[in-house]
Length: 515
Image (cartoon, rainbow, N blue to C red; front, side, top):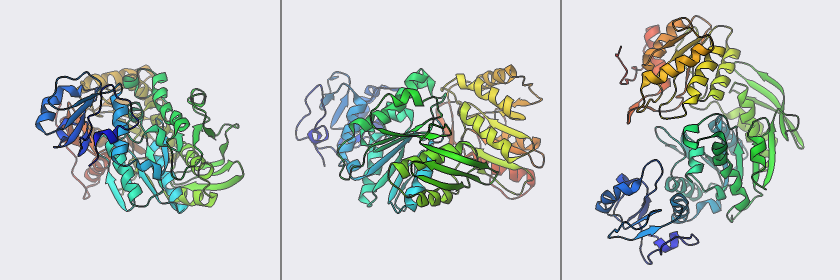
């Protein structure tokens, strides 16, 4: 077992680290502490100093945190930044596996998972042994690991464990999806461990946590700032930043770091561009043009936004890693789909039914615009807005749907401890501000299962029903309880009921059977 002094080698603490004290593991969740663990009493949304008695009872051998020693019978190490200390110790606990990997980080508001998957398939096609951690799953060799219910960037210890497993399995490259929360809280891999940093876009999201767009962008920028202070690597490449030339984040981001950069987009000044775009319901085709290359791209993923996701992956792989264009073409073509991203549900119904993760105003707009290209019929959108999250987007999303969809069904999406009726009222106000008329082109149906059933009754042959906001997620939160919920299962259940065919049972939520 490692000793504490080894874990904090090179890290400045405010109080001495006791010598010779071995630790079995590092925990930030007091419920997970085992005898021999170091407990990091992180203070962010929860003050974990409240749980010290529980931690002592469970056998922790030391506590680390930002507060002065509370008079514990075990060593207490005070630091100026508990999250930085945790990230440092986690990396050293697992032997700094990032030194043996070429690490690519993908951040942004929308498109992170799809871009990561495009990248993964390109690197696989190029013969590079690659792992990946996204909000959907972790891929380590032949292993596919579920990353949880409401998933985000994993805690530092879990992230470093994934990297250690990848290095141990002989992988040479790893792709990490990095959220703004993860970057702000120094979860996931450390920013200094990345060789290539990619941004998809930075739009209106998570302002409840970050406070402003500027602070939200600053959190994302950490990934790029880390390129200028990258750790020593055993097989180093020149660090590269991949920026979206068409996004509002371009100007403020590009001045925050010195590393080499490449831009992508439709802007004539972008380094990597798309020409001759053909967007059909079953294929997306374009020509990728960049420094020294021009090659055809085809993907089964439709939607104009996937031009950007593919260009970002091409920029990182072809320019950043020297991958041949043929591998990029093959890899992008190989991706059949991403769970919960414009995923079609077909039980033989005479209309389209699709599940997508769109849960921001920008992503909702993109999904509805993509839907318009699928059908000449009506577009029916079913979505909600999460409780205890950015409240401004509630009205914005309802407004967008009234403008772009024919029918809008407002429903539950993780209300948490907020009033679901109150959330829906805010959304209804937004709908009405754009000319929406309740009972004519928009409805409030609190139970998500009933909302899906109702949406299907509106659908005529050739129409499109879009279930938006949950995507791949496996639960929905009411108060503090996570109830099993999968939009794909629920939509199949609703379709099976309507068609009178075999299908799964509709998942149950607390709103079920309530007037």
